[in-house]
Image (cartoon, rainbow, N blue to C red; front, side, top):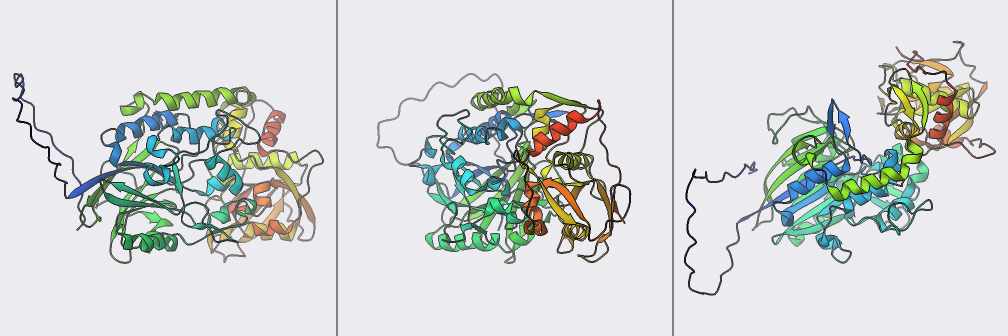
Length: 571
């Protein structure tokens, strides 16, 4: 039977009562050990998709998140019982980061989580005792396996050192069960972390979405195999259960979505929906808690497995604006979780623990800000209004149009392309700094040129749909041409027509020069057609995408205006 935990009430104080005298000393007798309770309480503090957001930001008019604020909440929630509390993250801790982290190879973000570790995370104890544990998201692979391992294990980057010399790497534990070396089949990281709480074992298993290679540059995941999430998780359960482990926490970079609500887990809350459902349904009945991510959404619900077991699933939005405070009740004799509940707690900077940001982490953020300040403060343009990445029903965004135009101009092409998923933040109204541009395009992609026939361009546009469904972030943003698509048509025939800027239908045989990001040129986001084409490189080196946007913004009349113009039409 699954129990829902409640709070503990303290005895009421008696007003104005005189203090009681201390009791007389009892005769000296050998002390006997305190009886062990039949249950053990464990607290899990989970967050996801931090993406290097070190600085507090305004959300609906209130300051939320930021590394020092989130650290204050996590430390405060740990204080009551540090020996039974774990801090966990479900991937995309780094990657697609703002400049104060991204320009420093995300070392300041790793340093933030390092600051929350203690002596139990010393090298010789880390894999047995460290209470800070994370798994991989797709963005941890943005710069490939070698850079990921350098960031975790230590060693200065070629552009470093940055804030720490030498860079010592992550001092917390990182796990992932479903990424292996294709040649050796060896896991990239340890699949799980096994811990003891008052003598009762609890296992943490990590996993990243199996589809990660489809949304990454093929170069970034070369030589790696991403296997089925549920199968990899269940294999760990089958390994550990015969050893007496029956409490399992999964950290997975995949997620669902449900309407938000405040307070503890509600049985009556609307059911979540998304890609995580199918994975949870197939999990072993010994799994008790899933800390999820990737969707950047709220989740606090129980999802039934095929065996009928209800698993608590949580997700705390993104960017450190909230965390999941989970309580587990373990039965000492069996080691099973017999109770669970969670609350998604907003990390307000103007209330609660957020009013006193963590000093050690605030110092890390201040040093990172100072290091990148000379570059990010440069004003490159003035915008008449916010340039938003929000899309029309057809999939077009004002920011996407602007960035595609910049790619087109950078390589003197007929057309321009960029992927909507690569645009991470809108550009503000008013003064636009280089830091704003780097926040919008944080990946450091290059702008390349390829030559496509009209027929090839149409075929490329058809690749925006996979398995009959448009994939999030896969609608290409375009410049120099337009097209109409029909969602009711069968996959492979959804493009109704493609025309140039003068609304003339493209000639299927004519060849066009197209400027685009290296990410999609290498087949990222599933645009495999581009992998068959040889890119044309600039004599002086391919321009960086953020630099290309800066150059383009500087060429526009002030203040510049950017808005959608209907170049993409949904029938």
